[in-house]
Amino acid sequence: MAQQHTIDVIARVHSDFPTKFGIPRQSGLVEGLEARIVFEPAYRRAEAVRGLDEFSHIWLIWQFSQAVREGWSPTVRPPRLGGNHRCGVFASRSPFRPNAMGLSAVRLVRVELHPTLGPVLHVAGADLMDGTPVYDIKPYLPYADAHPEASGGFADRVERRRLEVCCPAELLERVPAGKRPALLGVLAEDPRPPYQADPARVYGMCFAGMEIRFTVSDNRLTVLELAAAPQ
Image (cartoon, rainbow, N blue to C red; front, side):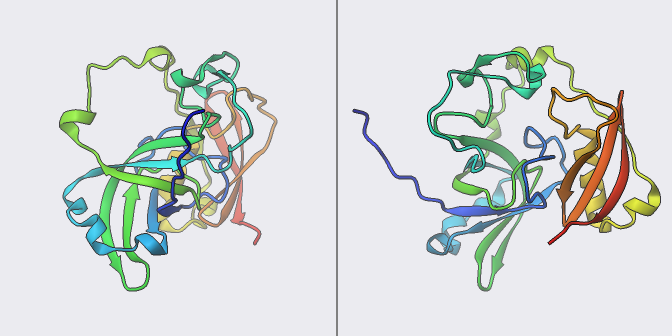
């Protein structure tokens, strides 16, 4: 029998996504998305992040906390293939994995030394839901982690499509000014499940305390409603 190990949650993510719907499918796709990494009480030690502010990017190792399930499947249907074609789970970044663990490279905006929360990491480009457990944090090393010549497999064979977003000015004004570019970026990435393409269907997502309802026809996303999310 394989030896079992316990992994501690060292921190949690605080982001503008209360649910997983609408979160970009990879980190860095929407640079304007900001989040905070708040350490659990046992790890709120300033010396633990000493020198981290010298790095521009960091790796986050975290749990797909909303995808934990009993058992696993050797094949999955990645969104990049439209949600209809299967590939091996280890050839994908699907959340439905034996250990439901994710990996994200995010930009480190700053390290805050909070009087009660200890060191708080402010990051950009995060593809993480609010409350996501973080297992580890490592600095991103360009000389070792960046491989411009790398092949992207089936992901390179599928064109990345961005939507034209139409949001009336009177609706967009309801969103805090600092959150507007991030929201428009999230919508342009097409939050819908890849297998849904009904132009009459109204979709809803929550972001930064707002509920956004929209439709998508061809390559155009139209925001219909934007209001404070129900508490």
